[in-house]
Amino acid sequence: MLPEQHDILWTFMTMAFTLFAGVTFANVIKHCRENEGVNTKLWGGIFGVLFLISFWETIHMFDLVQGDQINFFFQYQVLTVLVILLTWGIFLKSQNIEAQSPPLIRAFFFWSTVSVVLAGYTNWLPQQRSDPPPKPDANQDFGDITMEEYAEMGRVIVFGAAATGGNKAIGKGQCPLCHTFDMGDNIGRCPNLFGVEARSHTRIKEDRYMNEPVKVGEREPATGVTKGVPMESDEAYRREGGEEMTGEDYLRESLMCPSCYVVKDYGKDGDTKSPMPVISKPPISLTPVEVNAVIAWLQSKETPGEFATVTVPLPTSGGIPVEEPTGGDDRIFVDGSEAIGDMINILGCPLCHTIPGIEGAVGELGPKLHEKTNALDRIKDPNYKGSATNTKEYVRESILNPGAYVVFNEEAGELFPDGLMPTTFAAQLSVTAIDKLVDFISQTEAPPEG
Ligand code: HEC
Ligand code: HEC
Image (cartoon, rainbow, N blue to C red; front, side, top):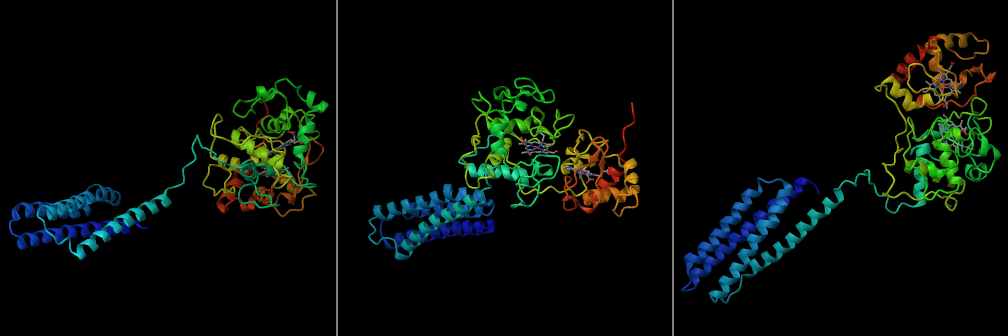
């Protein structure tokens, strides 16, 4: 119902009630005339005043906004009409007037009762419907969320809401920038997470887990996490009663302390350092509830519809700080209005690249971006098959079509993995944004030695 309709409704009701007061007044006067010995002045005066009150209420109704109209109607107008009816009854009884109210008036009374009920009802109904859904706040109550819904929340954090089975969209967690999830699907430098649930239980029994790169019970220097001792991990993320290391704890540790255990051949510096970002820290910054949702999804993704392998607890509002689950349908997109640093962080380039001039961009999965010097060398390389003729064209090509030229990794003595850099940036950048990004990346150079 539209607000205007409310106004019309209440204005109409109030006018009808005043009309009723008028009719009663006329009716009383009529009886006074017909019957001897009735105090016309008294009764006429009483009903006259009631009529005037009613009339004034109608006028007042026009000055009120809709919400106040309703209150006013039920608090004063209805009361006035009840008083009129009561007084009228007293009048008829006390003066021994046999003829009860004429049928017209009884019909009117019946009709107005029905109207009041209806009006109250129609008014109450849309208000219920238009109430905005309660905004999730810091004490958001997850109510009766099921494990299926919780695991789905995890899937959305990984792939974003826009993604459907198989396609490689990216959610808040940014995992698909690096990882693959289906059997046999490999893109080089990051382990395929197929079967990671089963692996999580065996990993913790490996000698390698016990001793490398840090020993169980020792602190991992970069994060300060005590490896393999869930009880000593960050309280907000910790599992309750975490005495012994479980598969769930391994997955959580993988996300919160990637360098606690480095999958063989996927690390840096002789597998002592993981290139994976700490998921609970910027730029990804998953909350405890989100980390657990991702774990729930990892634990159940290979058994669709079956959640027996999931051990994380369902979220509640108590104890852990809870935030609005994010990752919604905001498929990452930049329009160029962002500051260059924000733009690069939103797109996730720092997860893989070290970029001079961008704080915290120390990723090591791709080449250091020193394009002011490197781009022209790439174009001159006899292996170069792309179509760029200058620095900006090369940078643009590298971003929109990374496979056009695969950079050689001098340190490792082999090519950087082809296909690791996402090929989705064309769809994530506006024309302005790509120009801005190309301008910036084209002038990156190695910081002066020293
Ligand atoms: C910048 C690339 C990158 C991103 C982004 C990333 N990872 Fe990783 N991840 C890696 C690399 C490299 C390894 C292997 C080295 C190691 O063990 O830390 C790894 C290891 C793992 C492991 C351990 C696998 C095993 O077999 O034991 C898990 C689990 C994992 N990642 C989950 C995730 C999840 C979930 C996300 C998203 C929330 C994510 N990763 C985001 C690069 C990444
Ligand atoms: C998941 C990791 C990953 C992400 C995220 C990523 N890249 Fe890359 N990038 C690579 C890898 C690996 C290479 C080298 C292989 C190749 O050339 O395709 C590369 C190559 C490049 C090159 C060519 C470098 C040179 O010296 O020739 C440029 C430029 C580049 N990336 C820019 C970007 C920008 C800008 C972003 C963000 C919009 C980005 N990359 C995001 C992994 C990544």
